[in-house]
Length: 191
Image 1 (cartoon, one colour):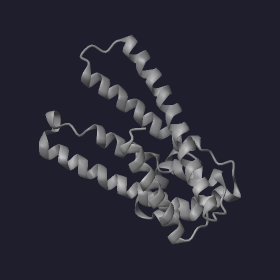
Image 2: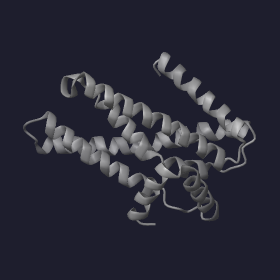
Image 3: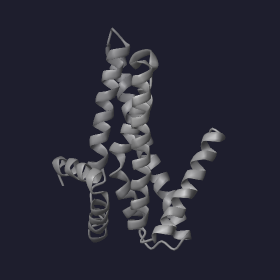
Image 4: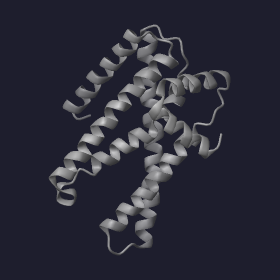
């Protein structure tokens, strides 16, 4: 698969998510050696370019040492994203198995990589809520856009869990409720 196919997959994921997730889950089941890296590489390149742009905006004098720091941050972000995907996929997989899920861990992990652009966009929008730069109305609009992306991301996770683990809709919704509760607990207790 080439990068152009990856981008088309992401675009199709916006307009026909059920079909894309079902198709990719079937492809993963037939060929478990599909490349995760193609779905991880493009978002990471995007992060890298975004970090360079942010650094140039925040510093008037861009130096070699700041570029080395930026490369270190890029590598760190790559490690964190990979670790987070595996951990999140693991939590979803364990909860799914407890509720009778019959899918494989690799399927859920692969399908989660499809969501990276949505996760990164939500994160980027959250970091752009700056009334000192965009004003109150601009920041409010950015925050609303971030919430829309977050809700859509939850919907994608629901579809991924239901399809990859072959669960009924009520069981997949139950997993989403458990995830929401875990998310609230982590936020409240600041883990």
